Length: 176
Image 1: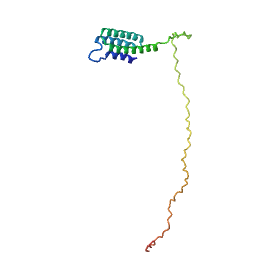
Image 2 (image 1 turned 60 degrees about the vertical axis):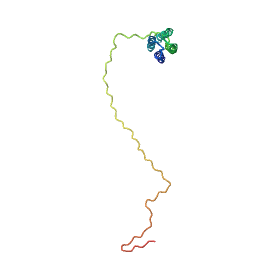
Image 3 (image 1 turned 90 degrees about the vertical axis):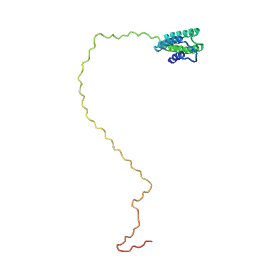
Image 4 (image 1 turned 180 degrees about the vertical axis):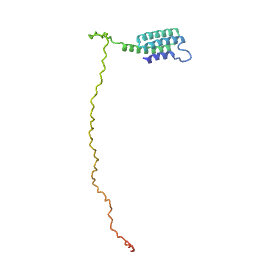
C-alpha cells in the first residue's frame, strides 16, 4: 500500500529533458493531494484516502487539459494512481469488519459500592525442621581388566650362556 503511494509521489516529482513535463503550480497541487492520500491511508482511513485519490486523479486530468502536464507524464501519473486505487480497494475489502453482536446482559450481581474488607495477615507458622537425609552411596566404579592376549610376552630377563669368570693374575684365553 505504502509502496503504491510512493509511486504516485515519485511520478509527480520526476522531470526529464529540457521541457518541464509538469508545471510548478500543477506539481504543488498534485503533491498536496498525494499528501492527503498518504495521511488518510497511514491513519487507516482508506475510504478518505480513496476520495482524496479521486481528487488527485481529477487534478491530473484538469492539468493535462490546461497543458500544465504533458500527455506522457499524465499517463505515468494515471498508472500510479490506478495502482494506489487497487491497493486501497483491497485494504477496504480486507478491513471491513463483520458486524458484531451487542453484549448480552449477564445475571451476575453488580459490584457493590461498599469496599471489600482486607484480609488480616496471619502469623507464619514454623515448618517442622527436616532431618538431613543421606545421599545414597554410589557404588565404586571398577577399573576395566585388560583381556589376555594370545601373543607370547618376551621374557624380561634375557637368557645368556654362562661365561667364565677370569681369575686374578691369569692370562685371558682367546676365544675363537
